[in-house]
Image 1 (cartoon, one colour):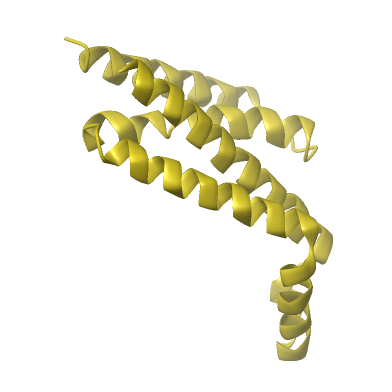
Image 2: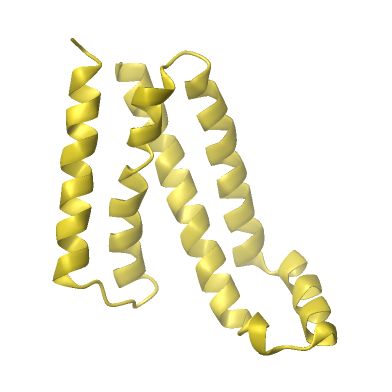
Length: 126
């Protein structure tokens, strides 16, 4: 279980950083829904050369390969809920890095997710 927790912590961290970098990079590119086809194609080309988007994609790839490793030895019913820790990291990083407002209700939900993950993780050690 220790191995699973350590690898999942790395995987979730990599996935969260990847998500934050993608969000930051895309916000800097602008709203794609307001663009015509030419604008979307230009944005797609810029996305391929934007460092934040490249690093974000690399971090999500790292998450994917660590996730595959965990699935090779751990029950899915234990491993998948551990991914929910992503919500905690996203809430913190969204507030501090992206400048988003995280309401008290959202924080309460994040705490409930943590409690649920702890209960599931504890149940696998018995």
